[in-house]
Image (tube, rainbow, N blue to C red):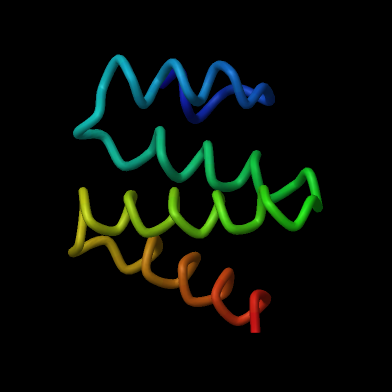
Length: 74
């Protein structure tokens, strides 16, 4: 719940630390990291998307987000 209803990257990081088995924390962290538009943050965001997928491989929404992020990365 914390990860889904925040706008701060630090809160999403805390959510992933508190619940490392929850893909929503990683997804929120990836989304917020990607919004910074810094090249190094985009690479980090891809890693967070991949972590979210690895935690919940049957969730097609996470795969879709990962695919879109990889598409934007080229």
